[in-house]
Structures are given as structure tokens and as C-alpha cells.
Image 1 (cartoon, rainbow, N blue to C red):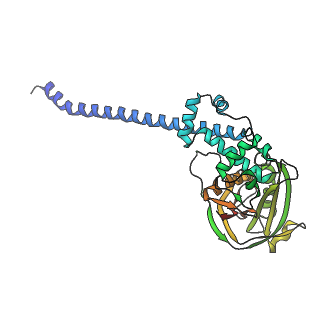
Image 2 (image 1 turned 180 degrees about the vertical axis):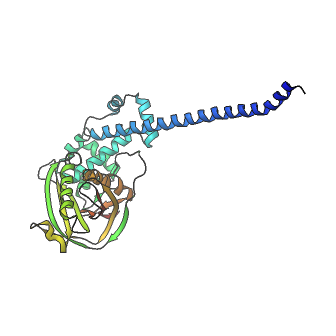
Image 3 (image 1 turned 180 degrees about the horizontal axis):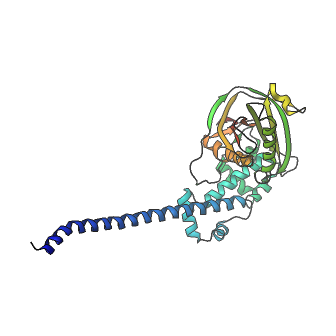
Length: 325
């Protein structure tokens, strides 16, 4: 066999392998490029929906409608609603309505605002329409919802989160707990607590940890809310407490308080003091509704692990008094 022919015969398998390698490489590169593009597109969609939800939350008391939301979004009405349904599993109109109803339910419990004022504030043109839609959602009229002893939470609807699964609260039976501590009270306009008073709560929490953190293993922050003195005001009570034998650390203005034995929803939490009020809102709008419970009388207690906590990073366990519906 001539030398050239022999060389070509030996090269054919090699060339075939090279061609197969190049084909596989290009195919895999195209597949990886497609996957990366899809991942990037998903992340862009998540961020878009997250920003849109934040904007809706900040404007729930405004004249909010699909056309206005569309204008904010920068997309066509059809494309925006399709993307929202794809990413959240619910329509934009249904989500906005549920959030407004949830906030109106909170206004009923935390203020003395007349029903017509609450109806108008959350986008209803008259009290009759508000009562009809509210009763259809909560199975109670607004007036009855305001009067029942326990806060009914199972139909509450929280802000959508598309950034992964959240930790689930657990139901536990807890014994009576006797505490002594300092009570701090103030009022604010309904709707301003989470946004404008986070720093007030944060500073109190920091001071508490600085004062007692090096001397005790556990401390408690107790939260309680109710109507204020004027129609639109809500009352906030913050209880900074220790076990009875350590209460003298806090100073002279000490009061006794007993947490009753019973059922509690508990969930671990850690974060900065500034994140406290936002997490408390998540408790009521997300975690407790997921359990299908009602909140009974008492304080929401954050039991702090004082050895693990610092003034800038709190570690503890939230407990909320509840009853099963």
C-alpha cells in the first residue's frame, strides 16, 4: 500500500473522533447557553415581580387599578398579567383585592376608624360594597369581625414572596410563664408602624440587650397592639422582661406579667433589630394564616437567647398565643 494511502486510512478514525467531539462540544455549548438564558430570564422575572409587589404594597391605599399598575410595570397589560400569574399562581386583580381586604381587617382591629372610612381607604366606593366583599372573603361582616374576641387569621393574605420557601411555624402547648419587666407604650397612625417605627423598636431592643445581655441567659420582648385614642391611631405596647429573680437589672419601674398556659404558634427567628417589625408583620400575614389559627388575647413574645444575641444581631424564638379555629 502506498505510504499516502496508508496514512489516510489511519487518519480516518481519528478524523471521525474529532468530528464527533466537535459536534458534541457545540451541542453541549448550545444547551448550556439555553439553560443559562432561561435561568437569567427567570431571575429577571423574579426581580420584576418582587419590585412590582413592593410597589403595590406601598400603594394599597391609593386609587390602585390594573391600568395604573400596568403603567408602572412598563409592560403591556396582557404581558404583565400573564407574567404575574406565571410567577405567583394567582391573578394580579385577585392578589390586590386579597391584600386590601387583609389590611382593612387589620384596620378594623387596630383602630377606631368608621367602616365607611376603612372602605374608602382600601378602594371600595361605598360601605355596602365593602361589607359584601368582606363577608364573602372572611365569612363575617366588618362589624362582626371587629367585635369577635379572637383575631381570625385563616383568610389573611400576605405579600407574595418568590425568593424560596419560608420557615414554617409550629403549634405547641406551653406552660404558664411569669415575667417582670418594663412596659413602654406609644401610639402611631395606622399603617406607619412597620415602615416608620421600626427604628423605635430596634433601639429599644438594642438597649435591652446591652443592659442585660451579659448578665442573663434569656430575655423577653413582648408586643401587644390595639386601637389608639383617636380614630386612625393604633396603640403599641412593648414589654422588656426577665425572669423574676433578675428583674432588678432593669431598674425601678417594673411590672409583673403572666403569660397564660395554652396553645402557641412558635417560630425561630434571627435578624437585625431593624428587621423585627417586618418579621412581626410576616407572622400575621403569612405564618399564622398558614396554620389556620386565630390569635387570642396575650402578648407576642420573642424569647431572646442573650448569649447568642448582640445589640446588632438578635437570636430567639417567637411565640404567639393562638387558638385553633
